[in-house]
Amino acid sequence: MKILTIESTCDETAAAVITDDLQVLSSVVASQDELHQRFAGVVPEIAARAHLERCLPVIDEAILKANIQLADIDAVAVANMPGLAGSLLVGVTAAKTLAWLLDKPLIGINHLQGHIYACQVAFQRPIFPCIGLIISGGHSTIYHCKSPFDFEPLGGTIDDAAGESFDKVASMLGLPYPGGPSLSKCAMNGNPKAFAFPRPFLKDSSRLDFSFSGLKTAVRYEIAGPGAVDFKSLTIDDQRKADIAASFEQAVIDCLVGKTMQAMKTTGIQRICVGGGVAANRRFRAALEEEVAATGGELLIAPMHLCTDNAVLGAIAVEKIKAGQVDDLSLDALPGLIR
Ligand code: KG4
Ligand code: ZN
Image (cartoon, rainbow, N blue to C red):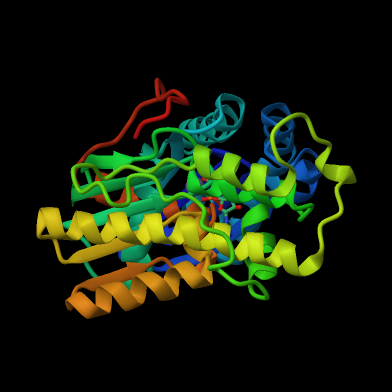
């Protein structure tokens, strides 16, 4: 069985062809980074228009690269939640149209659950039950993943997502968007202990939550103090910039790793699966690997190319097909932030 999966939840337009035994026949991602760069964040209206332009060419390319015809597709899956409304609508409309045209089953999937399921695709082994950590530009959530259909939130950010804080701090430091990769590159030359930025809730063993908004403000004060400031006109000495970047990055990593280890301890679950763009951060990967190894637990972090948004996330549709959980043409885009 060959499933066409479509992803358009935020600012990547992506399509993949995946078999029901989780072989990835093709995966195509059209990034919009260059369109959002000058705004230092995703502009929903621009994202939706770019999806519209790129959706069909990306699907065509995925079919071509899989060396099949459109008529060879047995099912169409699409991430229909959560995400930006306009962006989601493009993927959902394309998927519904194709499913109707080809008279094949349509499956809506949860993008966040797909991020965790990417670990099952990458490591080709069952991942449930596990602790799932999703760290992206829009979400920072810890789940107890009981099955492909049952993700219980254990905690998450009470304000900004980890990736959002990377993007904003990078922007304050005059580093290009997306901020995660550019900030961590800058941080390589810095001292992670140079500044003592806050690590909210880290010592509070009663909750598995994060808060990154105060950290962002602490960095802002360190750079420019309170009051209005034009960050574009600021000049920051290169070493100071690297030290701020490294200290900020370390604070985020300490929170993410600390709470994941706490989740392991409180639930007794020994397997951790991690997905989402921030999971591409090398220092984070190394820190979590070290901590989990010390406990004898099993750690599956999505490989770099599956961390940021892509359509291989849609592979979770295979589980839905096997369980008979197929949607009909009333499938809708559900933007709501589901923790
Ligand atoms: O999962 P993703 O591609 O899109 C969302 O669903 O949000 O995640 C994008 C986020 C951005 O905020 C980006 O800055 C961050 O992931 N990111 C990173 C790294 N690479 C991407 N954050 C930290 N370190 C990285 N190396
Ligand atoms: Zn994502």
